[in-house]
Image (cartoon, rainbow, N blue to C red; front, top):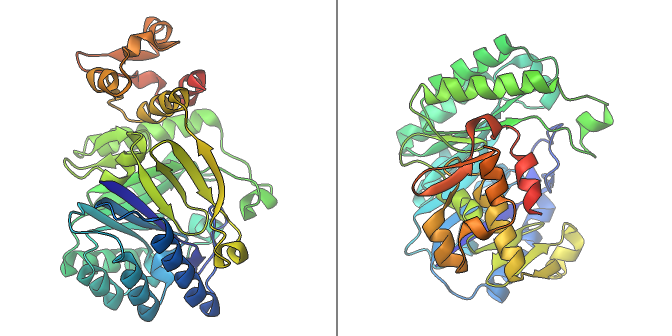
Length: 360
């Protein structure tokens, strides 16, 4: 079995912080793009049963009912008879009752909704268009239609944000009563509007304080902190994202999508003209045993429970203790272990990149 990611690059609105592959929704581009997506899937998909499917973007919910109907017809080229989790990303302003019913009809069973903040001054800065009332109404509507697995995105460490501002946001997010929250510190990336406007990141100590505040509030409300940026109620961890962190195989379809199949990783072009000319793949990297081991460590240690020692040995036929740097990191208490797993110690999770870089 495999997993699959499908990228829809179109957005009604371009957020000031976003460096993903995206473009303003332009109706005349959609049909050609979907035709190219169909061609890519028909060309490269080998017919495996799909265990998890994730449609991301961009903003998939920005598509019209007719365009989404065509997208789901293309999705059904995949063997979904055993799919366990089918996620689609949405923005509040483009989410409608009709679209939610269409998602449900096409077996979507998980929604991932971009919210970021409820604070009006930050909504304006981030170029987000929703209101607090609209968020609550749309999520209540999704629950009424039958969606009981919903993720929402929370962004913190915003310019001039205070702990009081964050406390307000966390309070409002908890009132939504969803079972998964992804929490991201604002990263100001090149080529974004925030970067062009010379907006700077907040003080790192305050960023850390905010990270720990979120962790405390959510874990006190029965959320499990299972990955550096992700919290879930029991049994609601993202199965698809765990595919990435477990270093398992997956297809990537669509503009800029990446995939990992057997002994190679690949990245699709970010150029729409090339993609629509069916020149889908930009680069392919053959994965050596050393590369595979490196990815296992870098991705696996993002999980709060870390890497299972027995599973690692079965996968690589070596003890994890024989991996360079592991014993030294354990000795320094940057890594710790229990009977089953080795994982990053709690006081180092926020600075995990300082550990992960040692495996590159």
